Length: 345
Image (tube, rainbow, N blue to C red; front, side):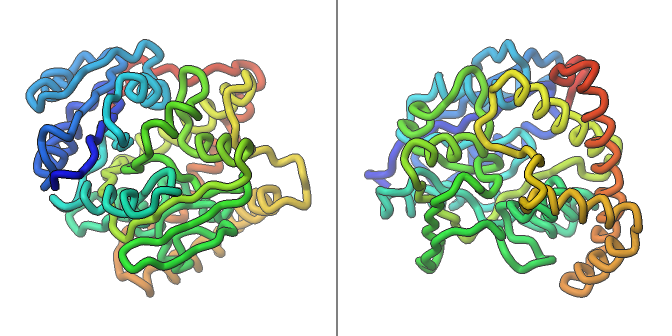
C-alpha cells in the first residue's frame, strides 16, 4: 500500500442528507491508507444536514455557487490535491472495502489510460424498484438504450456498450481505446481520472462527464480507458417515480441550455437523418407510441433475471418521452437551466 497514489474523491451535493451518510461511510470503510484519501464535498447551498454529515467524515467542503452537480464537480476538481480524482455522486455507495484499490490498481499498470470506471451497476435485492431497474439495464436514462452509448452492463443486450472501440481483456479489467468522439456516457458514478488529465481538459465552470473524453479525442485523436470488472451502487430514485421524472426534466432542460450557450463538447444533435441518433429517436418514439415493443423488451429482461423491476421499463420510457418532448418545447420559449430551488436528493 505504500506506493498507492493519493486520491481526491469529489462529491457534489445539494440537500443530499438522505443519501450522503451511506456514501461517505462506504468511502471511510475503504482498505486504502487514510492519509491518501481526500474527500471534497462541493456543496450548492444545502439547508438540510448535508454539511454536518460531510464534516463528521472529515470532508473538505467547498462552495458551489452554480448549484448544479456538473458545476460542483468542476469546483471539486479545482480544489483537489490528489494524483487521481474519483467522481462519486452523493447517491453512490462503494460496494466493497477494496473498491478503491480495484479502481486504482489498473491505472498504475496502464500509464496510457486516462481513467477507470466500473463496468456495471451493482444490483441489490433490497433496493427500490427504480434503482434495481437501472442496475439491470445499466443506465439511468432508458433512451440511451436505444442510442447504444450506455457505459454499464445492460442485461437486455449482454454488453457494456455498443460503441465501436478497440478492447483488450486483461482479466479483472478491460483496456479500451476510443478513436471517435462517438463515446459511451463515461464519466460519472465512480469514475476515476488522472488529475492532470482532468484539469487540462476541463472547460469553463462545468464538468460534463462525456465531454471530457470527447474534448481530448478531438485534440489527440484517441483515448485509452479502463473498464474495471466491478460495480458501484447507485441508489437512483429508489421508488419515487416523480423524482425520476424530475431528473429526466432536469437532464433535457440543462442539456439544451448548455448546448445553446456553447458549453458542450459531445454532440447529441439529431439533424443527420442517416445517423444512429436520428434512427434511435424514431425507434424510441415508435416503441413508446405502440407500447407493445416495450412490453417485449420487458419480458426479455425478466427472462434473463427474474425481477419485477423490469416492469418499470415501459413507464420509464413513456415518462422519458414526455419529459424530453415537453422540455424541448419549453426550451423554445425559456431556454434556461432547470431551477435548483428546493432541490434535494
